[in-house]
Structure formats: structure tokens, C-alpha cells
Length: 197
Image 1 (cartoon, rainbow, N blue to C red):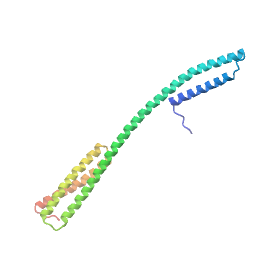
Image 2: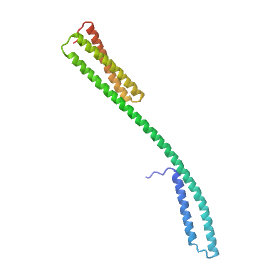
Image 3: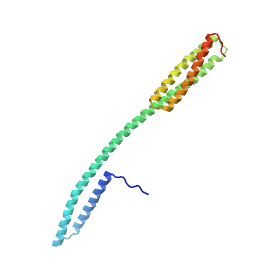
Image 4: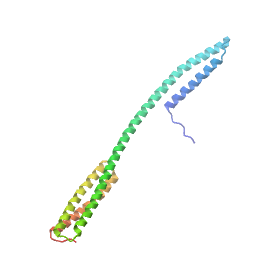
């Protein structure tokens, strides 16, 4: 079942103008066919001319309404176009922010993986406890910096209303914080002379 058409001032004005144009054409055709050879025929011609004059007035009114409807539609279209451009700019800036946040998350994850690998590499060899302690302290400082970066990314994600990224960075921050605390405790045990295996 076809839905009824919604009211449209533009369509209504165009249809009204079209009806008057058809009426005008019909009256002009009637006038052309009228022989104007008798009094009766001349009276019919006069009535047709009167109808043509009235139709011309109506045509002017309908044409004015059509122009006004076109102008209103043009104004509406300009406003819609401006809104679309504003929204496109917003989408573009949000896309750039999202890409930046993802890049920062990727860099953070790579640095965290590098820190873990570096720690394993530094402490894997049979080295002096002092060098192990130094490696642990360097790694702990790096983890602390990564925790701050995870926090900064989470804040930027929340400020940008990107809840998924904020949750991901909060999770990574919690993991990094736990690793940092564990490493700081290990460093403290080294300093107290307890060797950690």
C-alpha cells in the first residue's frame, strides 16, 4: 500500500501553477475555435477573454507562490548543507583524534612489550646482583613513564568520548602499574640484600 504524500508547499505551488497553465491553454484553444462571426459567438469570445484575464491573474499569484516555495526550499537546502559541512568537519576531527589515540595506544603497547623483553634480557645472564639491580631500576623507571602515558591516553580518550579506548588504556595502565609495583618491591629486596630468583 502506497503511503500518502506528505504536504509540500513546493509541489503544491507547482501543481496549482500547472493547473492554471492547462486552464489558460484550454481557454486559448476555445478562443481560437470561436469563429467570432455572430453576436452569440462574440459574447462567447468576450467570456473566454474574461476567463483568460482572470487566469492570467491567477497564474501570477501561483507563480509568486512557486517562487516563494523555491526560495524557502533553497534556504532550507543551504541550512542543511551548512549543517552537513559542520558535521563532516566534526567527523573529520574525531577521526583524526581517534587515529591519534590508536597510534598512541599502539606505541604504548610496543614500549611495554620492549620493556618486558629488555628486562628479561638484562636479568637472564649470570651477572652481578648490582647490574641486575640497575637493570630492574631502569625498567621500573620506564614502566612508571608508561603508566603515566597510559593515564594520559585514558584521559584524552575520555575527554574525546572514546569509552572503548579509555577502558583499554585503563586495563593496560592497571597491568603496567602492577608490574611497576612488583618491580619496585623486587628492587627493594635486592637493596636489602635478599636475592630474588
